Length: 112
Length: 120
Image: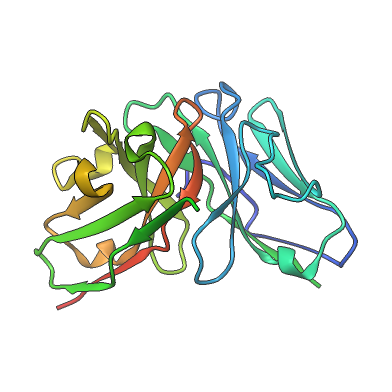
């Protein structure tokens, strides 16, 4: 069982918007603005899409945005494109004594 | 360009050890922490620990304490992750990832992954 909870799957049509949630606790998501989002295509390494809740690395389209409210962070993809179909993982720094980083279980995005 | 290149796939028997390498290029190796993350088949990402290439300091997830050792060789800009007493559930793809913002643990560059298969 992952430390952060994500929906197993979401879907949307090209051009639409979708949102993926990532729920943690006050020891991780809720306690720090240290949430990142990663995109992973099949057989590939993860790619950083959002860091520190809402910042985009250079080269990531502005269709990708992040936010946080309480213990839940969200990734929104607007203007869905076929190439956005992938798995998405959230991560957060955690104050746990047993590890530094927790990941969500991942969300499979299907572009219909 | 900034790049992390990992060693090739490994097949090991239960109880053996595996050592995966991660060679950095395109940036100052000692300037960024290196984290290790693994992904079992069809599963999510799991954080294993980090090494500070400058000092050699490490921090491991409690789950792997006593079985994992992370080291580095600054002369060749390479980080290593060794996992001992392998079990079948250690079968996974192992990734190294550079962390650009230490406090926020932002993994901005990833290696291509090394598949480790543990089977008798």
